[in-house]
Length: 325
Image 1 (cartoon, rainbow, N blue to C red):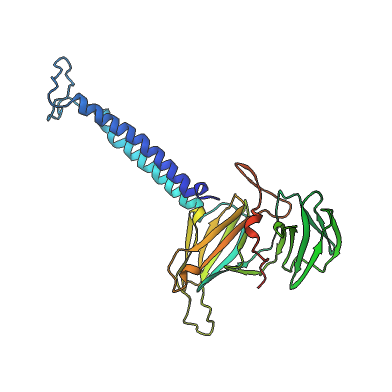
Image 2: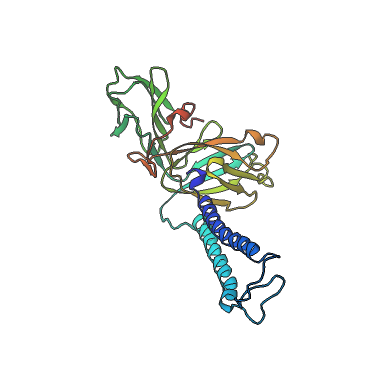
């Protein structure tokens, strides 16, 4: 969801279109009137409706034309108001029944992402496929440059080797969907080329080491709260923060002391990794309050948008360790 895809960017385009249209008509008539009725031009005595400089045609005027000078601008203002209100409705009252819920907590000086729903995702377009079946993991890496597989299930980590890019099969693992787990595939140069990951409900990621991971083409419903790391002092309710993704043209404030927090809706339609910034001065280390949001495809799905099928940006996730705390 680059900034040019947001509802406010589209609204800006619509306003610009109508502004240009009105400007062409207004300045066109202005220039025509200046040239036609400028001082020094001899009046046309054969035309009884001719306008003389400095005189208002009280006796001879066009009622319909004068009425249009009021009616047309009124219609235009009403139309632009409808467009603006429609944009607010799209942002604050989305119609989608299905949403992906996540809680975003802001502390001094980091973001915490608490998953209210499970998310299992996998890179697309890499030629690699990770399958789990009754505790047996299979990595199909045939024809790729894969050499190493790193597996993490809960707190347990294991490394496996792939010979000549063949399929790696029959790795027994005690895994269930309630555990955080990932499978990462690397090439001979130790570059990450494929990721499969299961994020269970209740799992948390913390910036700057971990990104916020959300599915593409789904409405994300984020509940945002400002919190204090000092839980012993009930008077400390945190400070003002702001969640800002510059490339999306999107910002929402964390309001300290607001029990229900604030709500942010967004629907990412372009997979990749995008920077997060805090856009509200929140203390001495405000500048280090940064992070990333990764837009990924759910397992077995792809991200479809105008330019085709999106591929997950694995190159920017090399430093991501799967959320190990």
